[in-house]
Image (cartoon, rainbow, N blue to C red; front, side, top):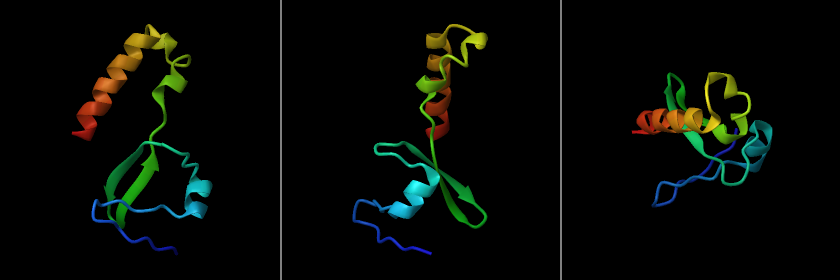
Length: 76
């Protein structure tokens, strides 16, 4: 188990071995979810990387725009 001390601004450092094990890259966006055991932190995939795979659902720019709107509503 590793520990991290929060700053006045609420920032914490994720230990390097945790970042490496779970694929947290520099400037990654993370999602925080309440869980029974505490707080779960997970990286949010960049949806623009998935644009090609989403093309069967419509034009990539429209799909991405809809996903961004949906994500903004979730984060509010």
